[in-house]
Image 1 (tube, rainbow, N blue to C red):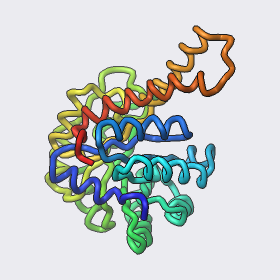
Image 2 (tube, rainbow, N blue to C red; image 1 turned 120 degrees about the vertical axis):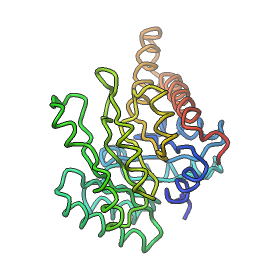
Image 3 (cartoon, rainbow, N blue to C red; image 1 turned 135 degrees about the vertical axis):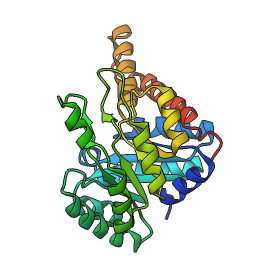
Image 4 (cartoon, rainbow, N blue to C red; image 1 turned 90 degrees about the vertical axis):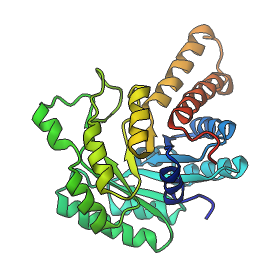
Length: 284
């Protein structure tokens, strides 16, 4: 297998006290930017692909781009399915050579989430593919929820322990007040809850929705025991800003290479800053 399973990357991170960044890619430019940053800092890397990215770029295109980048970099790189919501998409990625898959049954009743995740684990482990599960629901930045609803959406520490034991997942994504997209205000992360989960769960922990969380919050989460951190929105924002700025200054340019070059550089700088923040520099 060309790509490294998440299990190997995250167990090392867990033992040495840092986190591995999982950066979402949708195209060639983003893939190149992410891998360039990791190569410059000699960091392990998780290339994350959503169902939307697979539908947009094509599963073979995404896999081939990641494969070439991994071969050229010489780094330990995982190709990971992010938020797979069906057995169909999970199996499709496994058949095409993904080294890690996330089955997201967090919106389902607990028992159904357990049963589905366990099925994914049994199938994936037969071919050496790591599995990430999720317990608790990440609210979107646009969600208008009460304090009680916010509490209900968070991962229950005791349930987390039961979930990991019954499913056999290799990593667990938790909800502690984190959300997808940019935050409207200061993120209110429940670090006490995270400590309670860490005390009960032996597998690596994953923090989704990390774009926009202050650096100090990230450092605290890593210190408590988060081993994988997902970043997408901040990379996209860097792409948009760089392209918009270039076109505003150079409206006559129509060469995609010239337009997208600054975007690659901008995205790479964001990824480098996150790798440094997560503590994975030199850990490849």
